[in-house]
Amino acid sequence: MGTAAIRIIGIDPGLRNLGWGVVESEGSRLSFVACGSIHSNARLSLADRLRQLHEGLAEVIHLHQPQEAAVEETFVNRDPQSALKLGQARGVALVVPSLAGLPVAEYAANLVKKTVVGAGHADKAQIGMMVKVLLPKSDAASPDAADALAVAITHAQHRGARELAARMAR
Image 1 (cartoon, one colour):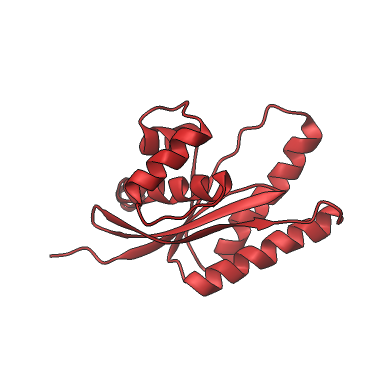
Image 2: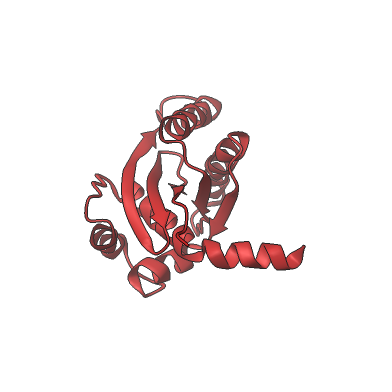
């Protein structure tokens, strides 16, 4: 009995650049679908920048038709103003797939790194390299897109355990 293919969008939240990556998972087989970044215009108001991210992500979801979404939890140790703005961009990353009817999972950055690279403190270059190894046809042109693919890969690897835990909790 084969496992049905599932299309997953991974999202790496950011106000300036929101990375996205779509993979298809069938059993233990992963295949690359698409990836990219949505950019907001820094000259616009915060509200308009969030609207740009919302519209861009909604378009990506409409175009690629994922069935599940995964968003990276962000950790920021910079100033509080930056943390608030990033949190608002993360809110967009969570609500857009939810509005599209997708279940949304969240993963800690260290778990994403550990799943993809094998170490919880990998740098962006290592993540990009391992994404290319795991998805040879991927063409991530930015670290944000590579990180988003890593989030999608993480969800593909961990979604079975999440489903089982959810069923047991019922």
